[in-house]
Image (cartoon, rainbow, N blue to C red; front, side):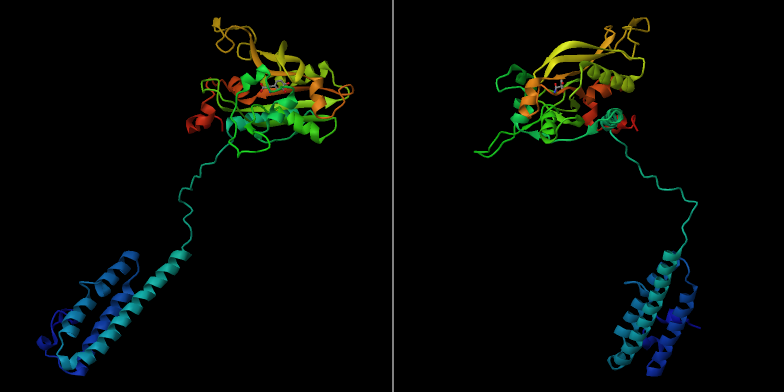
Length: 371
Ligand code: DAH
C-alpha cells in the first residue's frame, strides 16, 4: 500500500483522486502523520529537523504538496484543494510554533549549571603613581595636614608672580611650559602649571592661618622625554603656616615623612638651595635606602646612589616673607614651611624603576607588577 508520504510525490490524476471528499481524506492523513511526528519532537535538533521536513522552503512536504497537489490540480478542483492546503499548512505552522514556544520557556527555566567554571572578570588596580600619592597623603594626613586640589590651567600670576618669580626672573627658564591659545583680548594668558606651588597662594588667599595642607596633582613642563623627564609629571606640595612654626618643626616634619615612607632606618640631611618663594631654601636628601647609606653594594658601588650614599629627594624651605605680601598675611606674625615632592621620582626610588616613561605607557606588563 502506498503511504500518504509517497502519495505527496504524485499528482491527483495519477492517484485517481478527483472528489472533494477524497482530497480532504488525503490532507487528513497528512495532518495525522504530522501530529504523530510533532509529538515526538524533544530536542533542539529534532525541532529543527521537523521544521525543515515539514515547512522548509524548497524540499519540504508542504512545498511538495503545494507543487504536486495544489499547483498541478485541474482548474476546477483548485478551490477545494486550496482551502484544504491552507488548513493543513496553518495546522503544521501552529504545531511548530507551540514546540518552539515550549522550548523557549524551557530554556528560560533551565536551572543554572553550577558546575560550570565562573566568569573571571579582570579587576583593575590603582596605577603606581596613584598608590604613591595615597601613601604620601596618608602620612601627612596622620599628622594633621588636609588635602586640597587645584587647577592644572593657571595664570602666570599664581604660577609665578605671587610666588615671588617676577616676569624676567631667571628661574622661569627652568620652568618653560605650555601656554594656551586664547582669543585676542583675553584678560590674562593661561598656562599649564609647572608645579603645584600656585596652590600655596590660592590656599592662603582663601583661609587665615593656621594652614596645613598638601596638594597632590599633575604638573607640566616643556621638557624632552627621557628616562627622568616627561612633559607631564606629578607633585605633592606641602604648606604649613602658623604663628609659631620654626625651622625645627620643618625638618622634624620632613624627617618623619621620609622615615615613614622609606623605613625607620633612613637618615635625612638638607643642603642649602634656592627657590624664590622660600628663604632659606633647602634640598632634602635621604641616605640611600638601597645600600643602607654606605654607597657600596655587593662588593661594588651601589648602582642607585652611584656610591654617593645619599639620594636627592626634593626641594623645600621656610616660606619667603615676600610671599605673605601677596596673600595679605602679616609676615611679622606668621611663619611657615613649604615643600614640593616629585611623586614620579619618589615612586622610582622606592620601587626601583629606572625609566619615568613606563608610568605613561600603560603597558599592563608593568602595571600588573603593582596590583
Ligand atoms: N615648586 C618647586 C618645583 O617644582 C618645588 C618646591 C621647592 C616646592 C621648594 C616648594 C618648595 O614648596 O618650598 O621645582
